[in-house]
Amino acid sequence: MNPQTLYFHPDYLDAVRAGRKTTTVRLRDRVETGPVSLVFELAEELALPGVVKRVTAKTVAELSDADARADGFDDLAALQGALRYHYPGIGPADDVTVVHFTLLP
Figure (tube, rainbow, N blue to C red):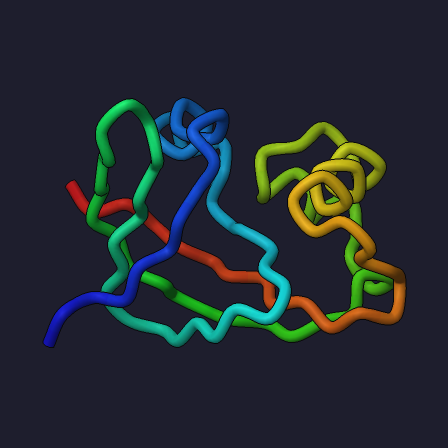
């Protein structure tokens, strides 16, 4: 079985590699637990093997500072700013998926 793919902005590569980013918040992205290929779109694609450990459904309004820190941000305001950048028009009532992942060695 091929692993599912999660695409990331290249700015998040260092945080993922360092273990500072262990979640990603996704809007309208179906993600399941199991093997995953974390793909960073650089000059060439870079794919890191990982495992999705848990998937949690929330609304944007339910996100917390703990969610933000697990996603590699200093606080909830920074996470919300990134969500607005990646998903223009996202609002507090929108359903999102918090994807908890780990890198494989």
